[in-house]
Image (cartoon, rainbow, N blue to C red; front, side, top):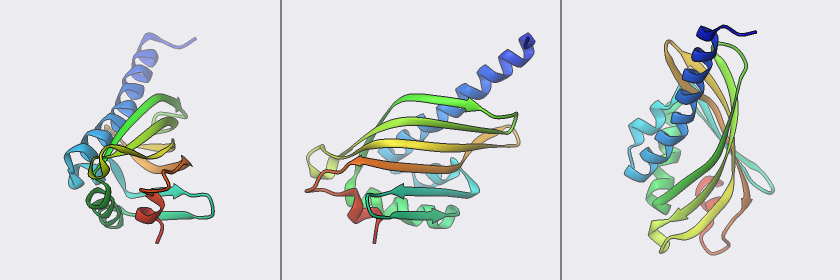
Length: 151
C-alpha cells in the first residue's frame, strides 16, 4: 500500500504533466515560440504520423523552426481532451490525449483531428515532453496539416 506522501507525489506529478498540454495549447494560441519549445526537454522530439509517412523534429532549435512555420501558415487553435497519464517512475511517464485542430487563418475550419502519444521526463523539478507524437486520424482536405509538417 502506498503512503500518503507517495500518493501526494503522484497527484502532484500527474497535475504537472497535464499542465504541459494546457501550456502547449496556450503557447500555440498566443504564438509564444520560446514558451512552446521550453516545454520540451533539450533533446525533445516532435513527430507527426501521417498516412504514408512521418515527419520528425528533434531538439529545441528544430522544434522552433517547425512550430514557427505551422503557426504562421495555419494560426492553429488547438483543443485537447481526455488526458491520460501513466507514471512509470519518479522521472518518467507516458500519456495520451485527443486533439482537435482548427485554423483561425482559414475561418476556424478544422484542419486536423487526432491524438498525441507522449513520453515525459522530469528534469530537476520540472516535467518536460521527451517525445510528443501526433497521429492524424483525419485531415481536412482543403487546409491540410500534411502540407505544413510534411515536406
